Amino acid sequence: MSDTTIIEVNGIKMEVDLRTAKKVDHYRVGDPIKVLIKEYDEYIVYSGVIAGFEAFEQRPTIIIAYIKTGYDGGLRFKYIHADSKDVEITTSDDNYMPIEKADVLEKMDTEIEKKQSEVKDLQQKKAYFIDRFQRYFED
Image (cartoon, rainbow, N blue to C red; front, top):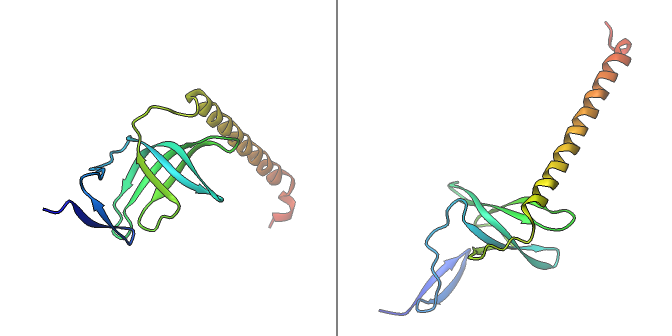
């Protein structure tokens, strides 16, 4: 039996030495992972989890939920399929999370409050429009 085999990933054929290859049998929803994403001209590693799988016939897709840090941080989603570029995932054995749970929840609460304020503002504008512009639309 040969110790090497040829595999194809996204159209790239590789010869793999089975004595040293790491085999991943499966991912499950909720499994911790690391995701490598190209942003501008660099690759950045984020902590995340497998959020789901979609068994589309042409492009089966893995849904990744990850935490982006920084001023535009928060919970983000990435969809990985055969045509995905500039993104990779790998298993994660560590429990390191570069951000605190309370910080993520606080950011989400702030976003919720902002959106609720926007809804309230639109409702007030609608009421003003109905009240003040009524004459323009009378029959």
